[in-house]
Amino acid sequence: MATQTPTRPEQDQSVEQKVQQVRKLYSDAPELAKKALENALPGLMSQAAEAQASQSEGAGRIGIRLGTISELTVIAPFAPGGAQRLRAILRLLHGNFSAGTKVGTLHNMRFVFLDNDTKFLFATAYDGQWDPYIEDFATKIPDEMDIIFSAFQGWPGIRSPKVKDWIVEHQIPAEGWFVAYPDLTVAETGRVKRVAKAVEEFLDKVGN
Amino acid sequence: MATQTLTKPQQSQNVEQKIQQFRELFADAPELGKKALENALHELKSQASDLPPPVESAGRVGARLGKVSELTIIVPLAPGGAKRLRAFLRLLGGNLSQGADKVGTLHTMRFVFFDNDTRLLFATAFDGDWDAYIDDFVAKIPDYLDVIDSAWEGWPGIRSPGAKDYLIKHQITAEGWYVAYPDLTVAEIKRLQRIGKAVDEFLDKVGT
Image: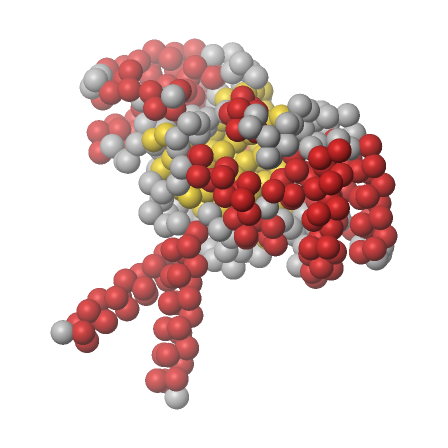
């Protein structure tokens, strides 16, 4: 539930009060930041007012969402030998984890090795709510999930009833989120892409 | 240059050799990992020989698939930085749209605090080459950047000649990257969206 409340405590405050608070906090920031804040403030005021109307929302159990697109960010320790195994797999695939296409709701996904291969970052942008998204992974690419995630300490297995708890435990909700086209799901993007292609073909025919 | 050599060392090996290496690496993986590997090996084999387009370099640092690149930066936070940045993000309701839309080449962007507010993850998906992308940020939203990045330990200021070096020092190239539509830039997706809308309106009119 943590994610649904990131902005709640301030909602009753006016934008002016919030700006005042931010200014106060920035009073001991480096000089360049103070100056940048003053430069940006006029724009910020109107943004903040709009933000109250269109702020990011919860993605369900954990994570935040803007329009139809949510973020998932997991940081977890590697199991012994896990980093080596995972790197070998990713290199076999030339870094392109194209099985992601089968999930159908995945916009982008990255795998990053941290802290001398002791920790791992997994970050995705996806459509809709957390629970169905995790279930999509479990039903559509269960083996790929286990191959990859068995590199992490304590991974219970994608078919385990405990798998969602493991993910929630290691997921950290973002405090800031941006999506260029928040109303376009992966499926809808595919649809408009086909429509545009058909229109072009149609115009070509009409043209000659 | 690290990313450009991501897959080179293995490229001369054949798929069978790679699969063999894998099996060896997975010999001491957890049981569920080994099982999943055997289940998936068939498919992995076809994938590895079909060669989905390889992940390439986004320029100086970072990975790219088609037209879409990833940037993943992890920085230590300056004293008071977490508090300032959090207040700033909350002022915007966690929604960074107004500033980020101006960059024009940004697909997704997230800010995640971790390790008890001592570190920050900044991760984006963007169009094209690293240098051009950073230049866009500098040209289009310098003040926002300095308000945000001044929370980072040692940040020299976006107008400083040391800014790019700082970013490169803290950026970690992803070892795995997936994008649903690698051939679509932000501008192209928005164009398709407009076409889709126009066609819908047209069909509505024709239908009545």
